[in-house]
Image 1 (spheres, rainbow, N blue to C red):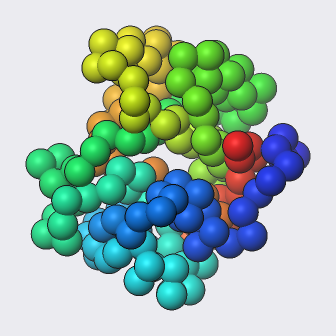
Image 2: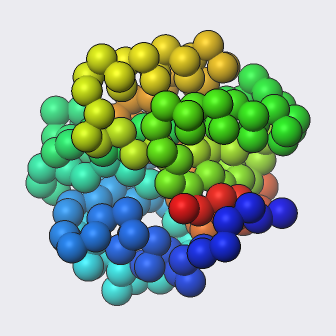
Image 3: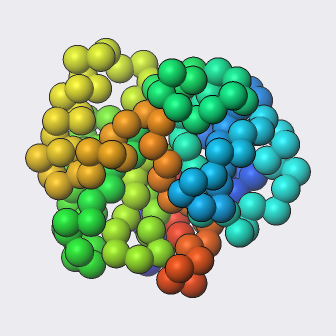
Length: 171
């Protein structure tokens, strides 16, 4: 069941919430190997319902989704496969982390976990590192804490399980 009241009407509207008043380079993909990079406005003109992955941090240009092309570490993603389908435990970990950094979105992976996007821009490097340390102690996947790592696209569709990547919290 959803916890928040103001879900976006579409992936396009969500992109406006995540990147207001700008048109950054973003990578959104149909599979984990995807590297298609477009401006936010170009993605918004497309049907994104068949896409599964989002690189949440904006890119410098459309050359690659590698770490050296990240414009800004704006978001970090918490995700844990170690917790299984214990949804209360997933929620508890996300709530614990949200005491340090604002959670902007949590969504179902379409399989056995939740992904949570935390907005880290504006925090000191020391605070971000402390957040990452706590996330790891709570069973977070170290890969998803890298700024260039894909996460599941909120409101996307996971093809291998034929499940929606439904938003659980949005705020």
